[in-house]
Image 1 (cartoon, rainbow, N blue to C red):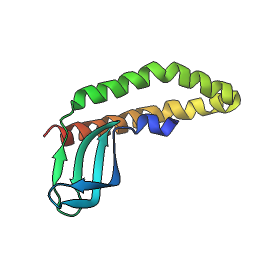
Image 2: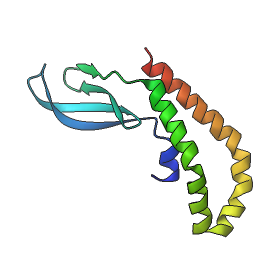
Image 3: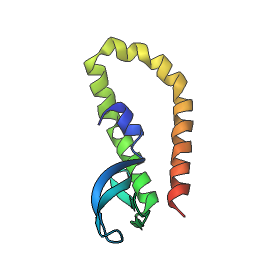
Length: 117
């Protein structure tokens, strides 16, 4: 996983051809994920939706835990790859961190409210 993927793994969707019981044929579906867990599958023809019951709080806690526990290794790897770039990027990263934390917290709040219905 690269740097951007680590902080953006909350929700994503994928399109797939699946058999729909209501349409009785293979149709295009949208599969929505929270982290790596499927949360909903929706048929694009008939709009039938199958909700998968997942514990949103556990998924988000697992993501935060993973980010915290892998941070030392990610920082070490980054500094070994290009030490001068690492040191020169630190001031900008420190200044932008409050904004990035706010943005991440807002995205997390929206994800929780969307899947806690």
